[in-house]
Length: 213
Image 1: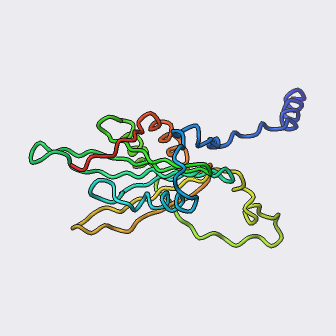
Image 2: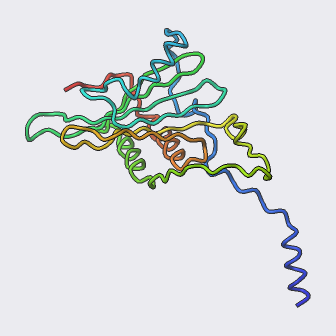
């Protein structure tokens, strides 16, 4: 019994190993083509990026958008998706399109991909579709006698990546339900999905504009 007690005390005195971060911070530049276009001003580039979820892809506005950014680095990106029918009559088939817009302090790019040549595009969308439901809750008041919450000073977001997803609701009778937007840092449940998508789609991007028929 004494041996067991001594072992238990020794184990209790050991410093537990730090838990690994839920999602490693990634360098967005590693998952992007070179940002070579420096023809726009910084303000024009930022507006160009922010419109990626609204500007029409072939025929229709985007239905899904993923965003990512690096705090203090100047890198930010948006990947917008929509689908269209290609072909006519009984021979038509649906195709997913994607458009990447990305920027840094030195330049910007716009690239395209579609599911006919990039199966990873549909794989990324399936990952989004499989995300667990979001359970929004009203945050509680802080404890006046408790330790200070570092999130009050935004310390936990310093130097972290930011991630976002925007979804257009389902269509019923030609009317779309409300849009849903979620944003978070590297610990967000959807952060690895966006990181996986950037890695998967990197070889797919092309400068060739998407077809409109």
